[in-house]
Image (cartoon, rainbow, N blue to C red; front, side):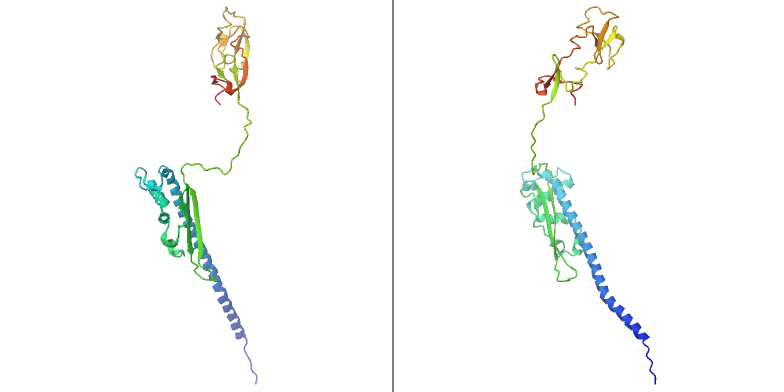
Amino acid sequence: MKLIFNTKNYKGKEISASLTVEASLVLPLFLFFFISLLYFMQLFLLQEELQKAITETGLSMARAAYFLSDFHDAKDAEESDFSMFNEELQDELRELTVAAVNNVFLKYAVAGRLNSDGIKNLFIAGGFEGIRFDDSMVLHGCDDIDIVIRYRVRIPLSVFGLQDMNMIQRVKLRGWNGHRLSPLYTITEEDNEEEAKVYVTESGTVYHCQRSCSHISLSIQSVTGKPTWQRNNNGGKYYPCEACCIEEASDSGIYYITSYGDRYHMNKSCSKIKRTVKEIPLSEAGDRLPCKRCGRH
């Protein structure tokens, strides 16, 4: 008698069973890491929403601090009439004055800029009421607005004995009151710069900042005959000098003119075109006014 065993089906069942065991081990790990990824994404969004809310609250109070500086203190401002301001500024001033007196009001100021239902669903222990503002300070002896929040985040799956996570977020701003900050350090430089020099003439009533100014650095040209037909650089005519053209001028003589002057001269050394220029410190200019041509820079 011959017995025949069919082992083919047994091998198939063995392979199928091994795949089932592997799937039962891998699938829970995959789901765990996938859920963890979603959890930390939600946690990141939670922190962003909270940070945005406390930053907006701080900026609003920083703007209002400019007007608060006109009052004696926060209590004095709290009792004042804000009807002179626009509606938005009135709300900001009320938030700031109340928060400066009592930090508890900060929670309500931030709550107005948050989605409370969303906060409740994002694993914060105690929901929005679980967020603490005890460490916050608003204009306490200084111009700073320091908003600090603390809260606990629940762990959805307790693994490896992990407990709720303690979280802290903060924003610190300076009130926009126009006060200048004290510098952390100062740099002292020796003043070795020489006093500015200016140029004057013996009889001049103005001082010049540039030695090349056309009023003191005259470009004298000689011409033959009376230059009544010529024009200076400003387009003006030339007339006889009262100092050196007293005698009857010859039509064919040599005359001297300058580019910006309005007189022609018979004598090149005429006091009207001769300039004795002297360099002096600006402090010695006395009552002289700056030249309109070179003293405007």
